[in-house]
Image (tube, rainbow, N blue to C red; front, side, top):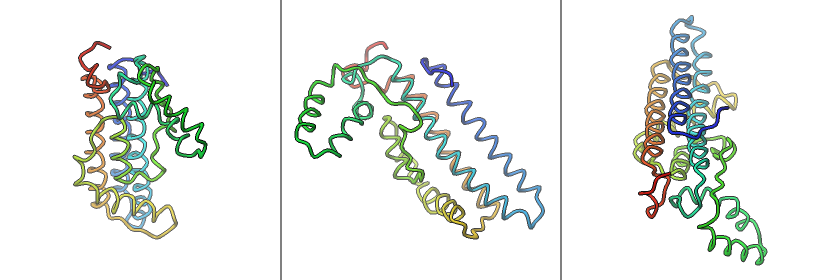
Length: 222
């Protein structure tokens, strides 16, 4: 995987990743249309799993790529907007939550008090974007918030994600004989693609406009 250091590299990664996912989902529709009638239910069951895989995969990879882009800027925690600074300090905050030791809690308080000048070591492996293997709409909101982007604008699609895509996917994953019509599958796919295209646009705009910076440093050149 190539490093993501520049806006051009970030935009290329976001665009190419969405391009192949879109193509695969469009191709699946053509496969379903060309199937014999008795083959369609099985093909669309697989199609639901495919749409979910691209839903989770693109949100995860888009956020990961953006964190890599920001991490490679060499900024300090104090230069970052609060949401991204929280990602940089997540591991320490997690230690405090799991520990009952007052000494550990004291160390974390000292760290937070002095964190502004610390290098922002942002995690950007796939594991650092926590979809919980079940990317419900609330989890999507949380991921977008963590990188300073907005998911609430897609509230109209909450039912599509939670009650249609995830419900069908989970029923299929647990071996239930869930049937999805082709028109229903296409509608779910198209709504998911609408969200993913906006995810790409938001991340790209955030990089171009340096929205990863806190208010006190947003006018600087990085």
